[in-house]
Image 1 (cartoon, rainbow, N blue to C red):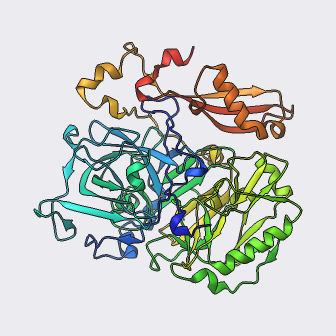
Image 2: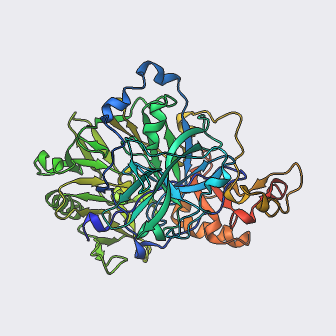
Length: 545
């Protein structure tokens, strides 16, 4: 495998609203054979935007107020491994302009392409047009920012280790978080891109929503305003189910959540105090200091796989392979990488634990975080019933980097106020139901970019009569008289059959979940059907036919 510096993918979260007027379709990016790297921003341009430490800026929110503050719940769509990222939807400006942004806890700036950008790629949505927003203001040059050559506007620049970059001007406008948010729109500073290079130029997603630690981070801005508590959470879907959830702000955490300490002063990235790893209950013979090199053990939503220091990787690989020595090893899906892959009879991710060992992360406190096989394996993209190790050596980098694969079907709480990170095993596609979280009332109707200009209004509303609304995604429940254990291995075939029966493209059918329905060996299948694109949305009357 190539080192982490060549294999990281910036994660995002696509926020689709159930049966709302603002949602476009999901666009699939290339599969495994075209893994597109995007790295933690290890090489940042000099910024003078802050003379405060991270811990000092967090003290602006009094802890006694945290329990009374709202939160923003946002859905995640796409798949970290097949799509390359998760995206979430946010709306910027008045009237709102919609964007699909990669959610990245390793980035500290939120940015979207600006309308005057001549070096920006073609992305999922139109560029942001500041001139169409009545609430937009550029951030004027001041002593706390880097300024343009004319010393009129504040500018930003971010360079990523795989040589992609983003730069532009800083602007301030209202940012809205969608129909399910209890948090009203907030004025926030973001980047309006004038230049993109590398993967940032070629990616389908519009930009990045920065959840890292820094004054320009969206989380830090909301905390400094006192509108949310100093916390956010991510929950990525499992191996066979895409999507997930994101929450900005704190809430009532599960009583059995496992927490570990996180040192905000060590680095700008979210780290945890990992001390050891167990495979099938047996501790690997490693000195705990192996997990403490460079930035320590970093948890990053923008990284796809897990990367361990060489000694830790070798020990883990040998321990796992001893447990599966009877399995046939096969070549990986991409000849450019020497993946460690196995052929196995089952396609059901839930059955993997019968063959592959459990892995535990051991923290300094002595508590452990149990990983199932789906947290360290990925499905072979070219061979059915085959799986590959999703953990790789980190080359000359001594940082332990835990990416999205490690936290699939796990609620991860970044409790920044108390300097700790929590883990809770769950079904991320049903997170809000399992946490009994209330939805915002009343829901807010947010338009897509295609309705932001008067000249586009007639075409955007074509086919929709007065009193009707546009629907771009419909959630459907189907009851099938077949046991879930027999149905889940055929989830891909099920999606294809549904698409064919409804005369849709397969990319428009998104399987959300398969659960048992009572004790009568039947399955409740939950799926979402999206329109081919924002201009092809249909009316609510058509949706109910």
